[in-house]
Length: 207
Image (cartoon, rainbow, N blue to C red; front, side, top):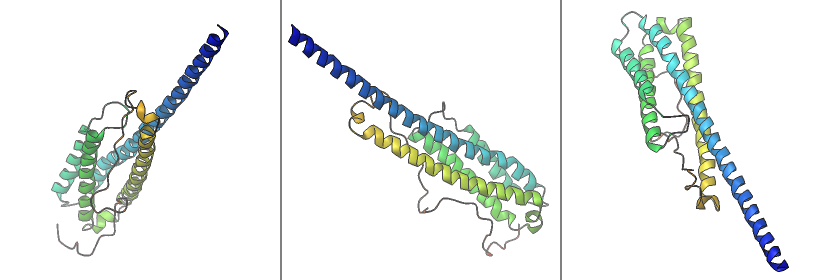
């Protein structure tokens, strides 16, 4: 009987230690998952900051005489498309959602770049304080976007590695821990994208 009680005690101790270990591992994965979601929220914040700058930029530029209206329309429509991309909840998106998000944001980036190329043909507009302030804010926002995207990928990589390591890999999927998608660079892009305001002299055409 004594030996049975000892064996039972050892078994209970092993089970308790096992539960505590798995619980600690689970909580660690939860913390890493929350870190990814928090970084995703920061990514959204900087993209929203850019979207919030667009109406002021369009309003400032549209005040220039004979400014190309089609360019302004393209920027406005691209911003509207960004607003239509819905990602449910506060969690980081899956691969399909992230691809849709990147596509919309990429269209806005392209439209803004074209707008700024056209602005080069309007020296009086470029000289205004309001436009110069918007240039500086937009440039700063593009830099923030690049930084926060990089941080998101780093956080997602740490989480993805954690759920694939032993022993987490044996139960992560069962507990709902799924791999997070990464931001991807555009083909041929080795550096973070930045808005450039000093354009080539080749842009000499008349509006």
